Length: 131
Image (cartoon, rainbow, N blue to C red; front, side, top):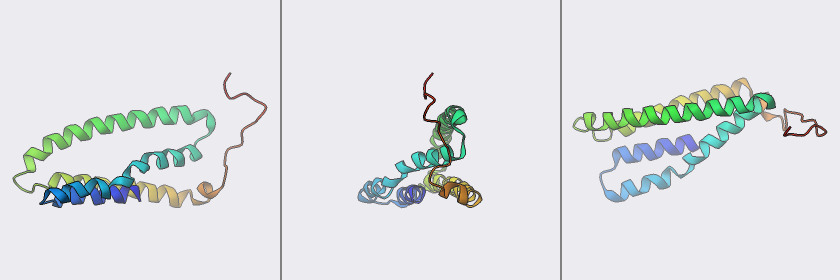
């Protein structure tokens, strides 16, 4: 839902011809902030507790690199394509959001039984969490 909300917001920004339509885009994209916590939750269920630090540090690095590359790319792309189509950059960003949608669907289908279990990780309560 969050990724679809993001796609809707980007398409709205790409097609906006009036100021009020541009102001409507954040309302449409309000749910896109829920995407990262949901993905992190799914990944934590698939990873043993001893490897979660490695996983989340890798995810954090990947997020930072993607943000840096995407902002540089789109900041260069927008002025270069504005004369062709003012909304092209926003349409391209919305198409790029289809990649995580496809990956999440594949992850969900392959691990449907695993993710549906209430608690896949058993923690020994006698052992302290911090040593």
